[in-house]
Length: 441
Image (cartoon, rainbow, N blue to C red; front, side, top):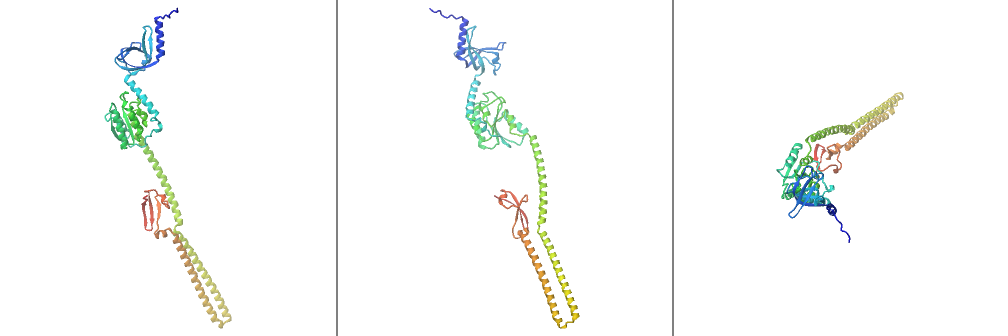
């Protein structure tokens, strides 16, 4: 007959401890604390119970230093623990690894589940985030109108940029009604479309206090909001679903106000810098305009009709003087010829040829006069033709016939309506003066 295995009490407790530890591992448990004790060693000892049972528990110092709550008798807690046996007494007990308030713990689980779901749907994707506008003139704030958050935002905006207009969309930010009011105010802000950026703000608080900002429907509405949004809920260490969905997350309401405003000193410095650049640009423009004007003046002087008239007048004077010189030379030649004939006549006294010679002389004089008159007439006709041709090409003559010259404000001649933008003004020169007009379409 096989002898039965005989355990010692300690050996049996050891075997049971190994079975419990290997069989259960880490477990989560909800219960009420009773008989709490915290000796000088720093370890905690207490009992977890419900309406029907209880179990001993211990939480050693290296673990309880990370607990954010102070356990008290009657407190409902959520713990993560390992099941074991305290061998000296044979008591099976829990070794607590993590502890939190039961209500907060359940909320935290719901928070993590919703966060994972929305993240999988892409609501946190940075590709869907809208950038904040460069110039913000009007800011909407969804928050409690009597809370510290709105006072902080208004104080920062008043200090940094008083010109920004603020629209308050009043809503509860804590409690059962808060979620519906927040969603309603967000929808109202979207419908009105009256602000450049929308801030959803609240001061710090516990997970329960901030729970209205972890609503699924509010997250979907915030994700589809066409207005750039900033979530400024709680303190820097607090994170809500709205923080992940909004276009920008600010650690505090004051930080959100700083994001949408520019420091006046920076603005004044920028204005001064831009003013200096404008002055430099105007100086360069003025110098270029002067140089361009001088260039056009020289070209105008070179091509002005008066200059052409002067050149043609000078040419006519030269031709007239040449004609006179030609006539004088012809007269002198005729006079010399006449003198020669007179001398020959006096020498030979050809009285019978005197009359024909005198007649020939008269004919020559008449021909000479006719030649001079014809030459002068030709010169006048040539001068008139040159003058008429000059007038025909003169832009002043063109304007006199009812035409006009259209120039842009920078002096450029307009040859195509596409050179002018809608509403742009331009200059029109006509025969009797100048006036300004603008393109209508």
